[in-house]
Length: 92
Image 1 (spheres, rainbow, N blue to C red):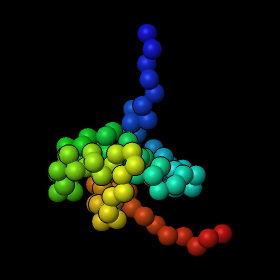
Image 2: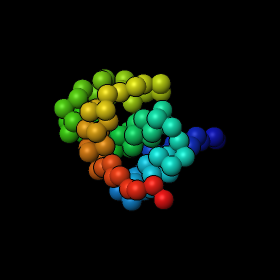
Image 3: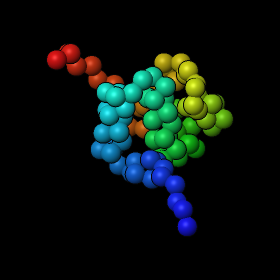
Image 4: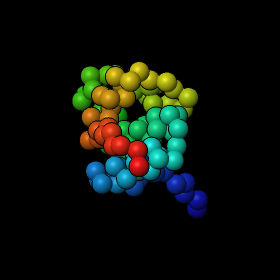
């Protein structure tokens, strides 16, 4: 019996979510970040995210799909709904 790895299975608390997003921010590109936010939204539940953002589930799936280029406002709404925030630190 083969089981596939799904990162969403491990994103079950705010610390794991933050660590995952910070790793993707450091190592990935914009597309990777959108995909990561999509994984987190899936882990939390798209219905819950839709309710908190005021966006429909279909538009969320579209905005967070591979190759999508969502508006910055959409990204910010979803980040807030998943319990995250963007913080700027000086470059070391």
